[in-house]
Length: 261
Image 1 (cartoon, one colour):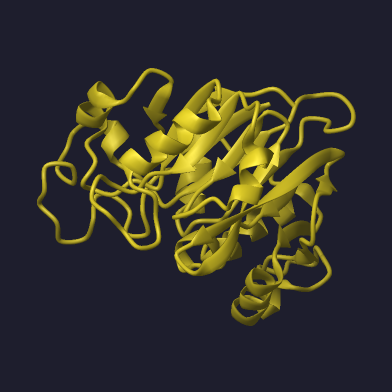
Image 2 (cartoon, helix red, strand yellow):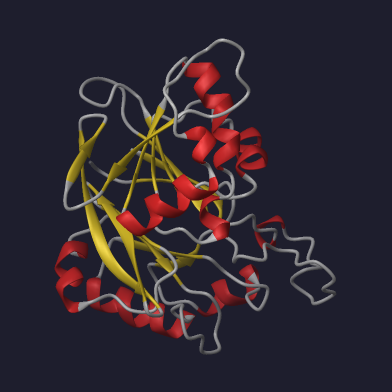
């Protein structure tokens, strides 16, 4: 499958409003970061039939979709309910129209409650009759499940004190916004082609891994490739890339990588 990074930035996005730091003023396109989300393009043929899964729906999903050529969303996996991960939900209506169908959304109970409270008008059956609103069907995650014929393993994580989810699909795993991976979740992240991991910045933060902490996790799990995401303006892509160990990289908006199902 192909993984496309739609956004790799922190909740502020980069450049930040009113900031004149070197990264916010950088002319390196890899330093321009939309809020974090990703698209997974599944392979053609059964069972997936070329379908696309979205992980989180950032406030810039429209911009990211246009920039990367995203034309369908067959399901959404939500890691948690913070604003930078759900506030693009209204823009899913365009995919409803393109596909003439409702979009199933998968999340834990806490996240579903927030989505339904914020976007109650979207939790309705699909009717094409010119309605300019999204149509979502909500599905609670209680353990491993299947989407588009593909097994998905939720990976329990901690975002500070908040329990959230990462996801493993085949030899790919996506773990953003985490400050701790419980020991019981470590075994779910073994034998990966690609691990996407939260690594906010170099200085400590109460709810996110730092880059040094991310390196420690990657060295323990030893995936084929580790890509750091949810990066702040404290991280210059070029400067940080020169210092990272082999096999560990910074993701950037628009990056495409592959992993086995």
